[in-house]
Image (cartoon, rainbow, N blue to C red):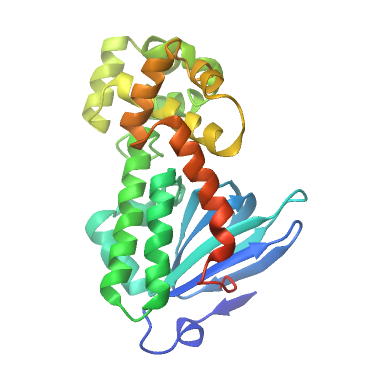
Length: 287
């Protein structure tokens, strides 16, 4: 298995390597290692990201943060292909920012995989394009990485991954609740999944997440709704109903609060993000 060295990837004064890569159906990037960190996210299609023996199926807007110790490969499934963006950077920069803002990122492998919303994906793409034009700009690299870490915090507020502060029963309930069959049960149904009394669940959620149970439930519902809007042609009213909202007006209100725009605009922007990928200037091969 090959190992890629940072000094062979970029000129000496560069702090970042940016690439947009398209893998056709059934194509792969062979297993490899590297002595730098990288952030990789899907802009269209589906890909299997195989890291340290585990397979993560990534869809549009899914992001992975890879460490120097990771050994990984990529495989595009038989149907369709994948368009992905990759930003590689020195390990020392990543370690410093993680130590200051996300010390658990290195300790917990699951926390290095999360989903962006459409606004976050747009913002990262714009920053990456600017960085591609000025790959020696260390400040611009830090702006990009801090935006990634901020998006990760927002994702964890919605569906946290396992760490030392979230009880196992709460984490299990949050993952189970992501199934649409539970959405109509609301906070009471969430508490039942926890197997605890509603007051106990409410106290725990407030203590470890700083949120209300209703906020956690709505966050899970809204991320599911956003994925449906971006990936399907299902009518908005049907998505609202499947998300557990009998009132379309209430669905719009909660969605705007979560994503900063109405559902129809979100869908249009998500489609535009994929459609515009052919005009990217920063095009190349993944490390």
